[in-house]
Length: 349
Image (cartoon, rainbow, N blue to C red; front, top):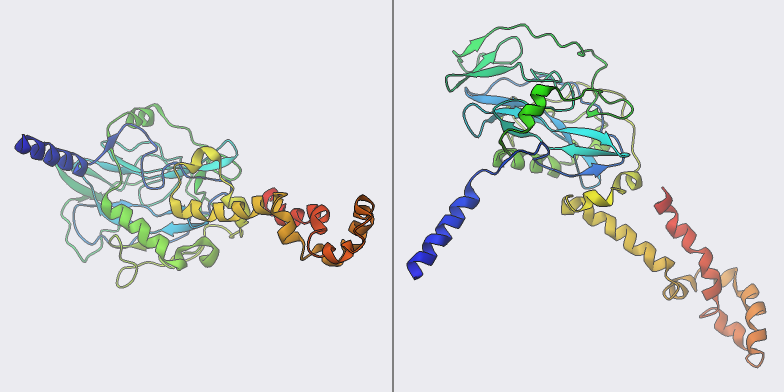
């Protein structure tokens, strides 16, 4: 009996270690996050040289965490399975908010919002390379194969992207200033195929970006210090690329507006992003609650509300003329009602 239970435990561990396939398009890092402020434009940068054969380029993107957008550098990644290609994640505007549709690996490239990430990802499909007999071949007209590593599996094929202009750096689909692309039949078919979520290496790469203050949009103004890296997690040293400029003039965003995310998306958000919201909201209820107001309000109203309050309250307890002395401690309860307004203004933003 004990042997049988051990076998079951081993099988359970093996199952957890396997990649998780999914036919849903929104699988990936940051799935389900929804923000009310548009992400910055895609920055301008060059692709670092291919560090070794067999790797596939995964473009950089704006992710969201700790109340701010932060740039996750583009990098070369090994596919989890030979024959699989990367479909980048993208931000899509719907219902008054920008939702994140995570990237995934699959046999075909699916819809990624028509966002022109460059380097083979011109808004639809991937022209940077292809699988040939279990080996990945690179399109030299798009991929920066370089000279550091000798790559025999290469070819040259001209790529024409109709929406590639110096002004076109939209990082999201839909809404004002976003792309207007809609999924094609082929992309819809790809969305129904088995998918594999981002690899552990990709997840770690994003976390490293989040931990680097220089990657935050509010700090770099849409021009990240590390725009692309030759290897995942490598944020310094040879081959690391800095953005040459922001894709468009950066517009500082209101933190309160960004943190006001839809209730439907809160369950999927990462705890770091959500942890700051409650703090702000918990303080407001406290000021709005009539039971706690007196305590906090007694200090402020003391100077302005003491006189009026005594006039209205004295009649009620005519025998207690000394009330004026108590005013500073308890009379303000009626006036504090005006105080909450100053504390609740953020909610209206």
